[in-house]
Length: 177
Image (tube, rainbow, N blue to C red; front, top):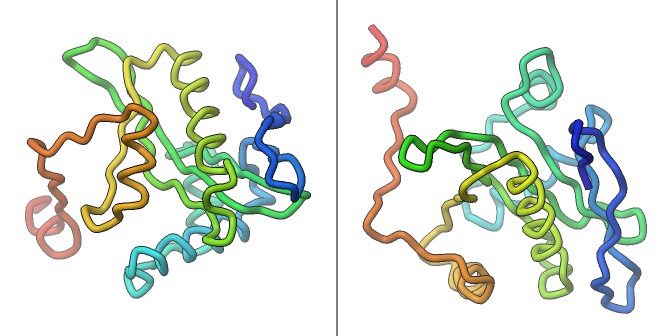
């Protein structure tokens, strides 16, 4: 749990799977290897491991350096990392309020269905409300039916009228010239 000043506090989930309670806390620079391992686990699940270029140095610099571009939550069961969320804030001009954007949510395959994903999302919702956000947003791959069903059960609406647009690599560089 994150207190009003952004400091990490331990949060215990009431969800138990017979394997111990979940704990969620804000990631720290010491968690960089765990964060990178979970990013790779997510990429493997999404069949995109070949696209991962992130290094420990980049994660440390961008997540825990002077100018932070993202925050993380680490979910543990019995002291073992079982999932994470990586998020940042954007701004909704229509709402006139910030938005919490969830870039990545990942739970180890053997831990799915045991409350870790819901606990992470619950903690993110609390952070969003404390920060005055008007909404939380994220993207999900269209083939990831288990995740889509999970999000729909939580009440999330899938926005099919919006198309995710991305500019990277040579086209990004060309536009910047």
